[in-house]
Length: 79
Ligand SMILES: [Zn+2]
Image (cartoon, rainbow, N blue to C red; front, top):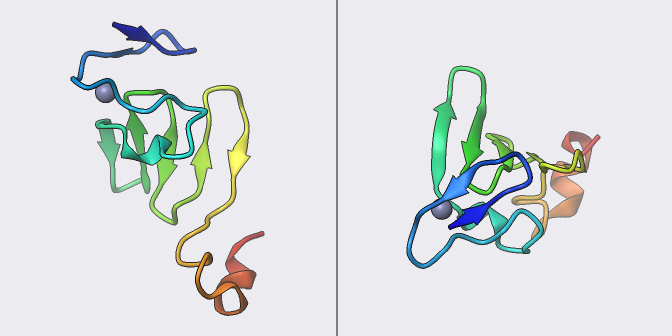
């Protein structure tokens, strides 16, 4: 059992990536709120539908897809 920073549990096998892993978005969604544009993953990450993220430790990750491949086309969305 993997207890996240917010006391959430991951009972998946294999365990989902932790909130500080680079593949944190691969964790399972445990609470989806599409009408509000965000989902809560079982590792405590809030994943927004623009690919932005809010980590359990308060760190905000700016939207990053598809900005990885075409940053010039999406720069106005990053701020
Ligand atoms: Zn999980």
